[in-house]
Length: 150
Image (tube, rainbow, N blue to C red):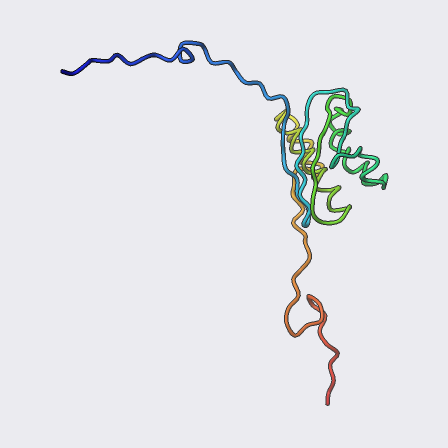
């Protein structure tokens, strides 16, 4: 004797799906061997945290700080967003440019209209320059041993 079962309808299927709103915009910036993961969220512009430290504590050089904040200055959004950054690899200069690249890409995710000015300033282009590998028989990548006739 077979028992006919009716499939149960899940209650969650009856409820309308809620639109999940992103609380932050995330992007990745790269330069040489440095990689920066940037999270941008609405705020008053007072928080810019890099690896758990403030921007001024992590990047002591004022030129690095200015370089990182330049996409925000270009778009006039310096006081609109708070940032949380995790950066690794490379040196401080490479990390600063990786963070700048990530900030520019996060601004692009937030507002697609900002593509033209960011692209014109070169903030969206990943700088492909990196150290050239050393070849065998050479002292460095291109420096050869001193030539001797005999």
